[in-house]
Length: 90
Image 1 (tube, rainbow, N blue to C red):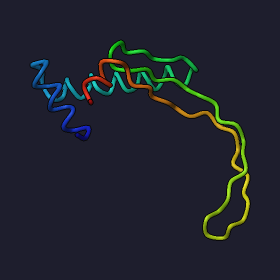
Image 2 (image 1 turned 45 degrees about the horizontal axis):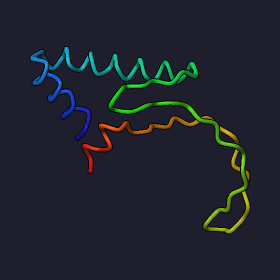
Image 3 (image 1 turned 120 degrees about the vertical axis):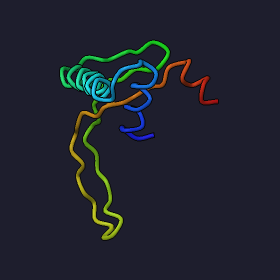
């Protein structure tokens, strides 16, 4: 399922126009993104949790040249599936 398929599904389920469904989806994604930028976590009960974790700097290897490279520390978004989502996928 891609973004357009999701917009179509939202419009059908909520009985709204595709334009309204697109705006709703954009608002949800923007809200999650803004919360993660601020370092907050977003919990959607039954679906899952979005949060930001910190990865330490480490040494890696370039697979083409086998040269060692330094990989800098960074913050990365992480999603952990909730219980209901895990059960639905089984």
